Image (cartoon, rainbow, N blue to C red; front, side, top):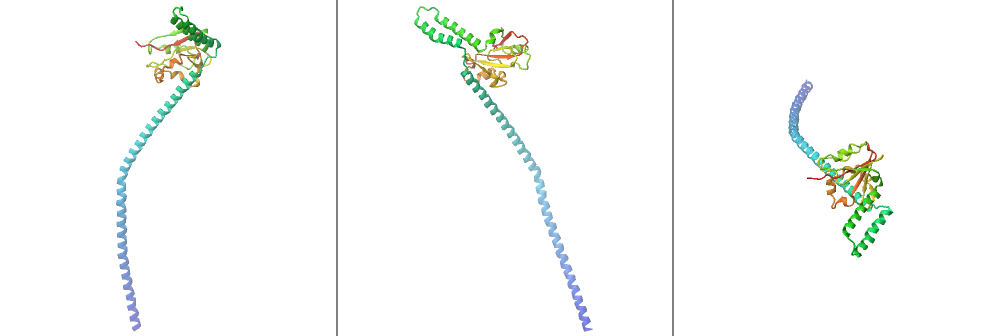
Length: 271
């Protein structure tokens, strides 16, 4: 009996302890769940705060993107402008250097110049009886220019020359271009375009020749494939000197309906 009563008591005590343990475990479980819920709420609040910031960040991102795009476009414009300026400087440098180096190889022209500027001037200075000395020199110099034209592009003197004149934007270049049977056209525009007299004649191969003040000739298409469109009044003004002094005229060869005609596209005049 004693053993039985003692065993029952121990069993009861174990049950009580187990119950207490369950209660304590339940208490701590509730406490743990509450803590987890609180932590979750804190995290959710943090997430909510971050979500609230997203529209602001999106606005900032859009503004930054727009600023970047604007800066990039501005950079592209400056880059393109700089590249165009560098290209134009190279064209101008090549043009001037080639013109200054271009000399006539015609022996007859060389002898004429030598006779005019050495023998004749020496004779004119020493001969006091020479009448109209200045007029004679001017006439001989005009002959020199004609000889330079002949030696620079002899085919010009095989043509019947027609000069086309008129005011700015009168349609001179467009009129001459109407005779072309090629894709090339003389430059036209509201602003003055033709700046240097251009002889236009029939030629199976399209070419643009610049004739120098020394009677030489250069192929302008080798400097720039679309050179004729760049020779506007603004282009001429961009030099620190008058370009016509070293390139008094040009010759454009292209396919023209009338083989034996040569047009001269002259600079327009103002009122």
